[in-house]
Length: 265
Image (tube, rainbow, N blue to C red; front, top):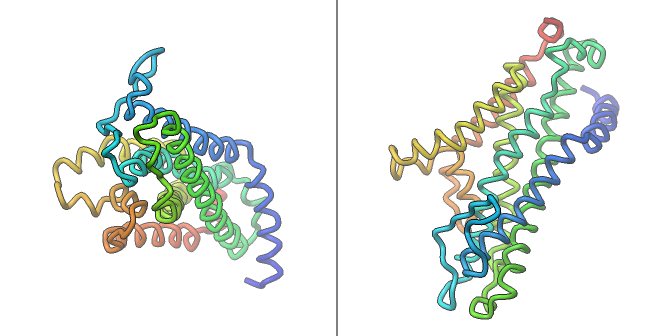
């Protein structure tokens, strides 16, 4: 792979994905929902809003009062992030893997195996950038939403969610990158875009909480729990090592296994 060829691939792919309507809508929805959900959750926790009404049911076990701490407030933002960032990361990762392989259109984009692999290597890098930016932006908006929500509650006005903002922002970006890379690798390997999206969301939303109840302390090694730990100050990085290894292996396999004849099938 020569540098000029690589740069040409980047110049062709980057504008495509940064202007892709589905990608932009997904990123915008993630950022907006994280801010709104954090704002509403804090309002409920401070008693300034009802947990139900108008068809919306919002529940939280946290109660914020004069005795609450900054970390309890920041945890409200982190809860929104760990709920929404992985789902958006799955959508972005699968989207970046693209549907061209199943349609055979990649033959028009990559006429040789080496160029096909280069194309997907660039896309893997784009996944890292887009999902990382989306995760970090969502964290900033979620933290801003929590601070905005307490502005009208004098008893908790002394609190601030920004005391651990660095770990929250970096952790949200890292969680998004890891989950997005896994989704990208699985989608590129299997060419089953819808199935991978559904399976990963079902696992994160339904299966892992069930496994958490069964495994107890051992659940800290599970992908969502391990990556969510990255958002808190001083995480145990050993817990996320298996997820990092899985993401790297899947992405590498997805790039190296690409063949022109495979794209044609």
